[in-house]
Length: 331
Image (cartoon, rainbow, N blue to C red; front, side, top):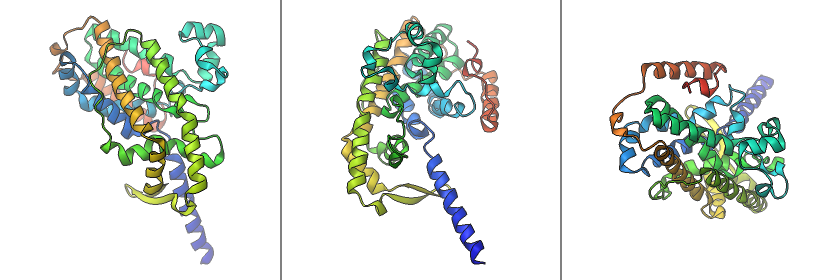
């Protein structure tokens, strides 16, 4: 009887730890991607905001689609990050910023191996410009929601580093702490006033500037973790909370708040950067498309064909079988 009891307890603990270790699989966490896309809508000029506000639920709900795809589509994962350390001690002056030049220098296989996030944002930007030119509601919404996700990832420091979840085993979990736990606790109190979206003359330069700024924060994140590891009571680092009907091990609220305090506003600043950048990239694509009249499609819903595609994607995501995103909305 005792053996059975001990087995049940051990099994319970294993399940709890599995849930804890599996809770950080989503870049920024669905909550923050939703928040970034939603707030970006309110940065848009009058000529665009009517269309986007009418479809704000789509823009919000589908902000997490790329994260869902990456567990079923082998091509998806590399679009969310770049391991910039691979390119030497001075990577931002070493790596070519133009895709074809980077391929010529390193080969496409190498670039794919270490992540292609900055170049993929440019691909999506071109797709969004073309969608505006066609005044295709399905494509505009699909690409807008997706590019918002990739831009959000570019603003996450740990998505620019091969040490995405810490440099040592002791730091495992820091990824989810930074991009999920802390913002979920505090984001409702952040100041998301970022002003109006701006036209970006050279999107490529902004993308790489963003990657560089994000990467500059990586060492600070690790330094804060090391400081707290030495000073914070180990028995107060974690707590258990109900996630739906599941009891889940999480970083305690007190520990998370202290971590955030020592980061000195970093997470709020990176979220604001993401919001402004998403709105500005949408706006830039619209301008580059010739500023088409969005009022003509403002009240148009997504097509029945796209609704069916979304339903099919839901089924495929659940079974681990999914098409590459270029086949979801025909280019």
